[in-house]
Image 1 (tube, one colour):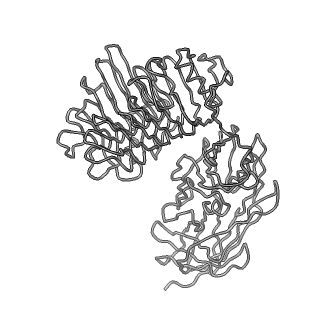
Image 2: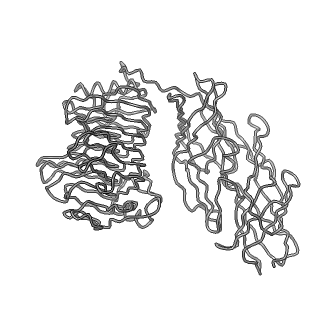
Image 3: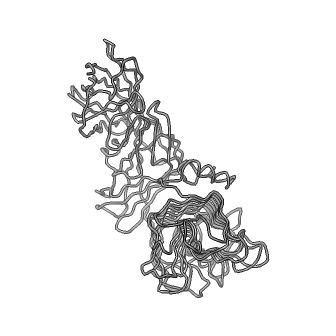
Length: 630
């Protein structure tokens, strides 16, 4: 039996100091207010843990004091498999407590030990310490429960003097105070985006260094509002953050603010940001003028409101479009919507730069002029037109069966391009072809054409309500790739991913198809006319497996697929073939290095292969399959 050993652990920099923040800059906090010395007696325990923080002081002198609680635990590891969870025996004071625990295998010589305070939002084992920041409650208790207090020292079972293990805080906290102009009470659903913000942090247990950082949003499902104000605490990993955008949904209305300035977030500090939220409104009427610009490529028209986007729609649909438009703020659309670009007046030679801003809201399209029209934020993106750097987080409903529907555009055709766009909403449509990014990608003719969708992500869901009984298709990126004719016409989908929750039908028939990337392909020219390069998909729920494929469904099309990966779904192949066997390709298609995977994201080797094949000078997949700008 392992003899009792008292271990003294010095908890350094355990107090988080809160810094005030002006409207234009984020200031650093002061240094730590105190240190803590804890006596630890090695034995074992199994009770759940919590360490508490209390807010002290006021204004710029406010800080968070770390306090030990009688139910606290700490986890220490001598190696990947030999650990000790130490339980609190006694809280001597806020900064001093006695713990006890024992290693699974007794240590017979002086051994480095590392670990972390056991908090409800942190998972620690012998190789990694993980905190998922994507979903937080916004309370101080929850934010501090997601902080990583990392400790290291040397444990000597034969020593007669205590061993000191120094703990340091690896995380920071941001306190957002959001002022609403017209909401006195209630709750807000809050989303926080920022360049340099991570929503999952994995550190190495051996030395506390970074194992993996996943860039992404932080979401608070329900933040209380009182006296027109919501106070939200979130845990963040230290980084150079900029373009912080907070968006709140209250009673179906959208509010936002964006902070452009850079902020160097340091560990072991707390920052306060107070902002007046701006209500995003859509009256359904087009504006008389833009926020700036002259419509040239060098000086695009500036779009800062829903009314100004409606003005652009009126110009494009009236064949009076300028050359360039740029979204400069997040906006919200509501009600009836006329997609930008029709078959009669296509969006040609126009560049729309979303500036990585978000279009929120709920839009409805009940009628379109022709079967060749498209439904989405954009209708028909055509010759030499480009939509780029746009995020659509809106719900789109289309009750017209005569048009294709997409989260970004209903149709992209000829030399049209959709680049680095993302759809996160919900599509409910009776269209024949529906896609998370585009309903249809179309090319035809003898002239060189390349219809391109690149570096796009779909996390939304698609529900087809079609009553049509002929061939219909839904796809994570495109509903249908369509080559009408022409040896030089191409549809290229590269560097894209779809992690849609569901792709399906309310009333599926034997002619209704679903695919993780593409619903169906119409191409009888050659394999090179339709290409899927460096893409991956992980759809949780596909329509009936008899008519669904992990990557592309439909009949036996001509296509090329290279470095395309899909999360395996039981009973579902990667591509359609005539016998529905387990072959990973269509009988007339060609595929190279296309496989399934079983984890949440593709394996490292898959991601490396995708980046090699993609070979983009601008974009790449990170280790978690997220598309990043280089």
